[in-house]
Image 1: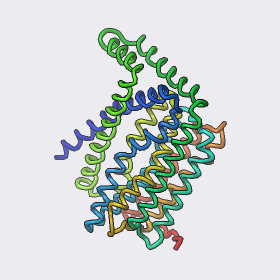
Image 2: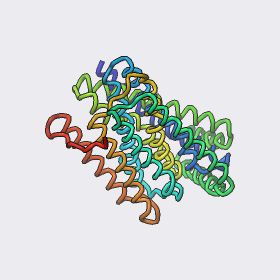
Image 3: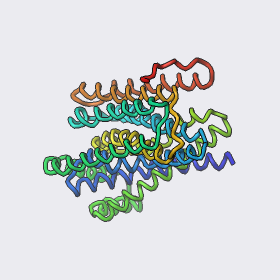
Image 4: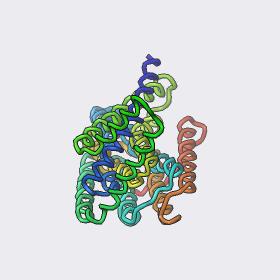
Length: 366
């Protein structure tokens, strides 16, 4: 059985990596065709798509909680808060080490502050009564609908001004294909040339976007299932830690591979929009669906969840602070700082769960 799960892990990683390439090519191409900024595409379509694994995990966790399974609540909290920490501290951290990432003005003054605000609201709702009720989930879902409406409105309003950015992304993609043609011959070169020519067609861009997303989500699910089985059944790691680390990392893999692939291809708008949009979707959409699915049972909010929530706020604050330095760009200093914070906190959480050290008593709001 263990061999099968290890094989599932390997297949999952392959699907993730190749699916991300298709997904980024398709999303960037569609943005160019629509003359819409790839940042907007990343903030909406890509963010929702890459958050699909988190949504599925949270809904399942909510259903378990409604049936009296306490592990369901741990899965939701660890999945949402862990994924948000991973998205900023790990994914943007690694992406910033690979390439300098510019942070748009709207992100510095609107999207990131909004992320911090809803993260604090999330903590406030959870701290009241030390649990989330179904109507808390409904509040979060309504806020997400408002955010999406605002984003679509801004995309339509700024569409003409963003034409140049969209075309530059298209030129960057074409340049990469040209470089690849020089290094390969024969059959594979013909395949790549055919692929490049098809990328000019809208229907093909839609197809590879959908196929790429399916590969990414399916691959992430294989990784999550395989890693969870190995961690819980073979290594006997507590469910809460598995949710915070293995499940959170696994459900963040779509964002990770998509952002790294976009960073390598020079499409920074897609990389940053994907992460910021995914974090907003995790708190408002993913958590909202999980809480609503839990129905009258509610989802418990404990001290460890409060600590994870505070670090999620700190992660967003660190992103905001670094976005105002180095010409409004995230460089290697930002990447190293983010990764150091993540490693330090996760080491502490694992040690506390294993009894090596005690959990710090964090004061609650209520």
